[in-house]
Structures are given as structure tokens and as C-alpha cells.
Length: 373
Image 1 (cartoon, rainbow, N blue to C red):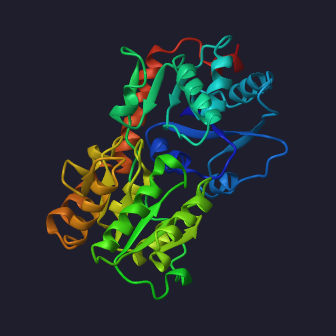
Image 2 (cartoon, rainbow, N blue to C red):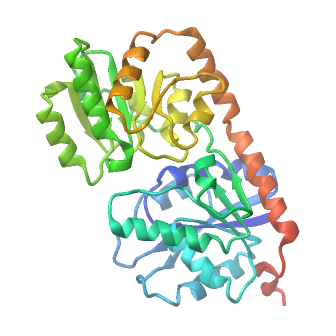
């Protein structure tokens, strides 16, 4: 059994980490045991990731991260990789990427780096994402989520597109009621995600106001939190949406709310392959989404939703109006079912195992050998 050590930030179970965890069982049947190393600041609160990993019986450990100038992190990381006799290390996020890039100066361990996209909330975030892309050039393979992301890396780099998988419904998702939705009219249009600029929730609110001007009454349900929460709530108020925009805040899982809404909307300005898109397909929800990242790859072939151009309130409003008049479209429902099959967990696990085999075939002097030399 080969060991794959995933190095991740010590935060809660984000979308990329949920995808990682979901692959553990399938990878084990393919000969790869997943273990997880969490980079954790001593003064930072412990997130929900350890509990998630324990529930799935995935071995994990913490590697202390004392800050941006912590030059000892690679030595601590190396020690754990040797103990685990890791065959492959894979990274998720800027700090894990930086730590393993430093480690590779002295150790030729097989390295697969994952690039999950970028946010545009601050200059600092821009710098970190730029550094992440630069540092990933030292990996044996870079995994991206879409064709657009592949173009961010120089021609000839060993970049692979591995799509996210439709995640099984969370068995512990709250399936009770949501008091904030009591009495709100249907159709209810949900947006799920971080409340930051690239997610385009401002465009969604403007599109709802435009529909209202045309006499089309809807309820916008915004699920998530982020730096623009207060600004978006103020925008909804200035647009006189009133009860037509409900902010539910951050939920442990959105699975429990899907039965209470009629459509998922992804108004993003940029994306990789959003997990919420795959979740909505699995929940058989009609979908309106912008043509960004890997979203067209999922929805166009077969036709499983309505696609609109990003950044345009007019285009988004027109797409919503089209979808509202087509909620029971059998072709779209069939497309959703086919997309669920195409983006299955088994297909993702096959792609990951194939990538690991490819990397190991070219690997020299793996860290695991140090334990016996």
C-alpha cells in the first residue's frame, strides 16, 4: 500500500478538503492510503478538520506553523513524512506549497501540487495566489480544476485537469426547517459560497431587483459568509428587496437547505469547478450559472443548466427568467442525471490513482527510502 501525504492548511473542511476526504476510501481500494498533515498556527483555533478526518478514520497529524518566517517548518514536515514513509506528497494552498517547495531543495520526494483558484478580496490575497502559482512550477505535476486554470501555467508544464466529483449527500446535514425562510414565497433562488467579489453575489441581487421590476417575484437565499456580508446586506436593502433576499449565513453543510429551494444560481466572476454545482446536480436542482472555469464543461455536455456570460446583470436576469419558465424541463433534468454520472467519485479516484502511478514511475529517491537507509 503506497502512502500519499496531503499537506493542507489547518482550517475547517473547505470544499477542496471535502473533495480530498471523499477520495480516501476509493484510493485505498486502488492501493493508495491517504494521510493528512495540517499546518497549524499555535495561537489559531482548531477548526473542524480533525473531527472530519477522525470520523472517516483518516490518519492525520499537526505540523506547527509559527508564521511567515518559520524556516523550520520544512524540517518538521520532513520528519513526519519519513515516519509515514510517504511515497507522494500533495499540497493544497499557498503555505503547504511553499513548505514543500523548500523541502524539495534537499529531498526529491514525488510532489503533486493542487491549484484551487484565486480570490480577489485583497492585494495580499493576490500576492499569495501569484506566489502559489510560481512555487507550483517546482512540482512533478500540477492538478487544476478547469481548462482556464491550465492556461495560468506555462506551456509544456506537466499540468493535469482532474475534475471535482459529485459529493454524496452529507448524512448529518440538518434536514429540519429554516425559520428565516418561513413564509417567503417561491420560487426560491439560492446562492451558496463565500461572500467575496469573485462570487458575484452583488450581480445576483441586482438581477433579482431587475426581475422584480418586470413583475417577477422571487426569494433570493444567500448561504455563506465572508468579507462582503455587510455590504451585500446593505445593497439588498438599497434595492428594496426586503424579504426578497434572505441571508442564512454560514451552514455546516448546504445539503439540508436544498429541499427548501427551487434553483441554484452561480453568478461568479471566476471559478474553478465549484462543489456547490455538483451538489445541486446531485440534488436535482435546476441551475443557472455563469460561463466560467469548468462550469461549461459540466453543464454544456449534456445540457444540464442555463449558462450566461459573467459580469453582466442583464445576462444573469435573462438567464434566471428563462430558467424560471423552464423549471420542469425534462431535457435539463436528464442532463443533470447524466452529469452526475460523468463526474462520479469513481471517475475522480481513477484519475488520481492514474496520476500517482505516472508520478511514481518517474520518481527518484523517495523520502520513504530514508527510513531504511
